[in-house]
Length: 343
View 1 (cartoon, rainbow, N blue to C red):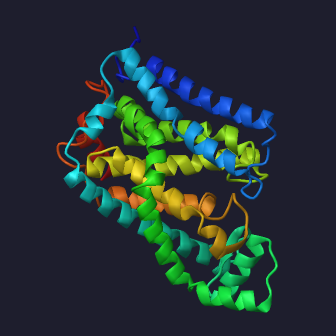
View 2 (tube, helix red, strand yellow):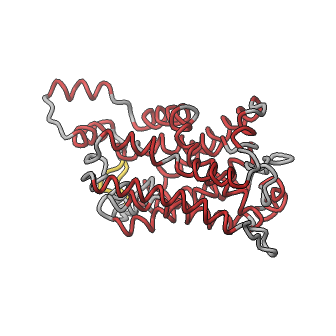
């Protein structure tokens, strides 16, 4: 039987089992990729089958880990509780939260990128491309193909200005957050902001999210060490990923609290993944450790939006029910305390 700390009520043994499965799975997938010669996951060098493997074989690891622990506990699976509840009102909250947070994140990342790169000239922050001609030039350069004058003219007529491009990216991000991206992100969120959040809730929001963020960030390490997200900055990239994950954990935790469903965290997570790629088109001269969306500028933007999100929202009443039935540390039990600590 797993021993529970009398002081905190945290079942560290169960958490160790959960993380051992999730992290062990991640290491195994990373090892398979390495042995198959996929040692440069820097975007352009990533094979299409690798992207599929990551979506289908990597992201579900926290979900599987949570289900295994729930099976060991014998308390029933939280999946039943999520998908058998009336979701109509929650869906409206999810749409409002996702749209507002995604808009705030994109605006803040773009604004901070312009200040850091264009105005202050911070090395690595990138230069924001505002004119359509610059955007087209960057698209051509990124494609790695040569175009004649007629092709360039056609592209110029098809590429919208920066603000239209951002608006299209916003709409697409919300759409994929509620569909394909949200589905894959649910594999992570059921574990991190679902089962694990319930277990760590008695620690309070700050300590719980710090722990979740570190665990979540390090879970990405096998891929980052292969060049994913941060290219050749592999060890520094792991550190940056942990910092990003800690900030994002507060954002996603609050999304669950204010909507009453862990599905909101999955939708928002998927939407963030959905707009991240736009910064490769609108920013040049970037360093992934510094520039948005995953570098220092992106981390600062997420931290700022998360702080405002906590400041101007309250958990739904009576709060989200725990993912694991009769969980010893549920968000529902701690919601009033968490709300007070965030105020």
